[in-house]
Length: 533
Image 1 (cartoon, rainbow, N blue to C red):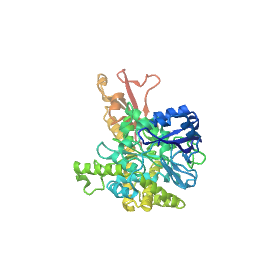
Image 2: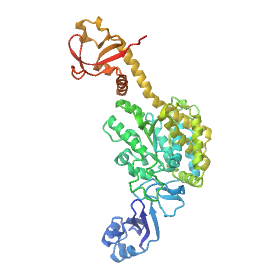
Image 3: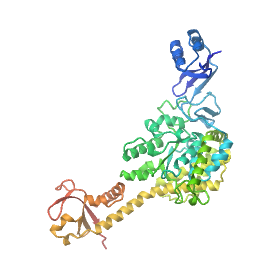
């Protein structure tokens, strides 16, 4: 017999409004479900039309049946949380489809529009399949640990951050992000967040991934018209990620939440080049976003794929690589989501000891980190990798992640080293550009040796002064000597800081210096200081 009944009254904690959930018999005999605001359910014609749109059995589409269902008491009362993540006291953790731990508000997850793929498989099967396969790659170990580290951000009072795995297409960088996702989220690449959705509005994504790992598909799929637009969109994403995007004024932060003033998320994405290289193409320097969305060149040891921990990794054939990729993708599709719930239960049981354990693991990582410590950015990035290591270490303890701590430490440190190396790339870029400039200026002829008729055919000239060499060089020749716009910009900035460059003079128009032959030419004047005894 066809049935229409009110199964639940659900409060949305983000705005304190309610919805009523009804189950009903469809015309084909299957069970359907619908959620309506109380005011909608009280209007029987509106209710009827909603049922009809969902193919409800015709016998249910009558006024007495609908009004009786609307007036009935719900079978249970529950609530939708404003976000995923921790509730007060770290006794409850909300996932998209359920709450783990103490649940005094009867939270049943997030509203249906906050979509997250349903878990599949079991924790034990994930450990045997994905967990073991991840050991074959330092990059996959890193991304796996990111999922386990995300719930620690708030406990350790760390801000959100992310990693961009860089490498050419076909080497497995997206596969590495998928492995990280499989811990608590999607198990297939086509289920990952897209840049279309993320750029349209970051807050919906953050609500669904608060205190969790958020994996966004490859940067190269970003819907932008130019490399410069891609860089600026990425930079904005990194900034919003690092600041939590939405502050306490948002209704997402209900009075009972434990979100503090912002979301906490670890994010993963991938790209064919590092974001630093993308910035360089656009003549930009990354600045503070370099420690919010951290570049990690993911093909290690000179390989062109992610499986650096496989014996004889450099000798793997394409067929062997494809078998490895297939095994990982199949394992993730079959086993995803459940291991994270088990891990969160361990964190809840251990909540009183967690701060000390996190500090201990982070100190161990810092003590073994081989990267440089110059500057705040270096120290900040090492600390973030230390938190990732702490996540992996706690997973070994809490859910039996089948790795040894020594191999975990080595893998995460290896990734940290290459990430730190990308930071020093800009300094090396400047040093190389400075050498190019010095060599080019030294090759310019002395003005005293140049005939008046020869100035039109030379790139520039040098005049020796008591304390400096006055070097004048054509703009186009200056610009062409550098490897990319960033190198040119960095050299120009250094010249400006030293006070060695003159772009124009009051009596000369827009950098058109008057050369010794009396002709105005677009050029730069560089006053290279002479060494004095």
